[in-house]
Image (cartoon, rainbow, N blue to C red; front, side, top):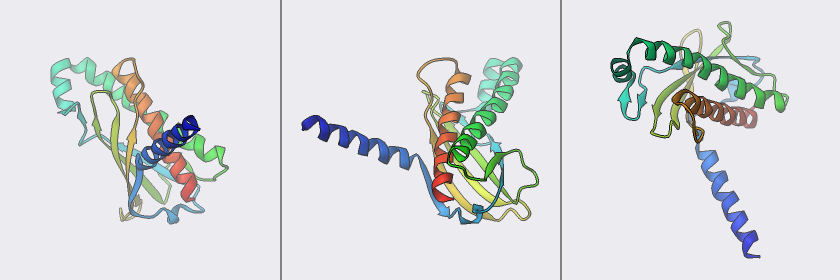
Amino acid sequence: MNRRILFITLFAVTTVFSISAQKLREGNLDFLKGETKLNIVFDYSNLKIEGRSEEYYIEKNGIKWKENWDNAKNEFFEKFVRNVNLKLIEKEKQLRCGNFLDSKYQATVRVLELDNDKDMDAEIIIAQMDNNQILARLTLTGKAGSFGTMTNLVGDAMKDAGEKIGKLLVKKL
């Protein structure tokens, strides 16, 4: 009996933290109902890595680090988008996310922070493509893996974040 109560309590706590990890702060997602495409872009302009700017790491580690980091950002985009779409496909939703410049809407993933464990905090702003009117704002966290290079850990966080947003989209569509 006590084990069952413990299990239910742990499940409830885990669910609460998972739900709070992606939260609709402003607006709603009703405008995405019936849409087939959502353009995704990443914005790293306000990123802090362990409290420091990208520029700090470029100055500290040199041009090779910057080249590797820029290449890694492309991988992060792919992992995020792939995992959003996997959730949408799994639940037979028609919306697909990616590089769709002909979409009516754009989601800008503003990556704000990568902490010491390379967990990610971000904000997603969804706006109309033609006039940049903001329709929704979401907060998002991504949990990094437990070991590996910085790129691997951040990639795991992007995968996790993509899965969370995919689940939220499925729920709202």
